Image (cartoon, rainbow, N blue to C red; front, side, top):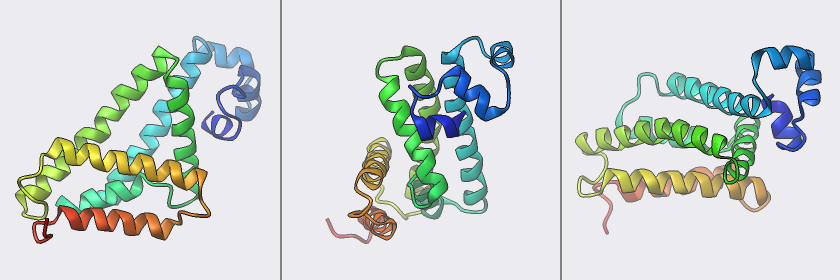
Length: 183
């Protein structure tokens, strides 16, 4: 499902195309999913689950700023897999603006990322790795906005924004959070 949506957009993700791609019949899909909207919501949840599982593996044994940096970098399209995930996510953003069922899924699923990231910001503050005077909610929002903006720019303007440039931008942002950084 996610491959079809990432490749053809939501408009191209018809029941027939999804059935053909998955090797199932449309009748089989109808048995497991109530309608196309249910398939789309399931595809979005599945994509997010795969991403969360990868975060857990990558952040295992890390804490504070190191874990936060890994989480931020993992949410950027730094390789083909994450570029495909980012493309899928952006496709869903546009659709969610006009589809309440997808907006609800996006909002509930995004809460997990926000909460995880905020906890890591607070942990880094407690460890003395991030300025204590900074509001963790605002730091988290800024990091999420940076992820979203860089991701969109990478997909749209890839020849201008390399993966190494994205990593350098993130590193600069993290340097600005450091208590040793002059304001």
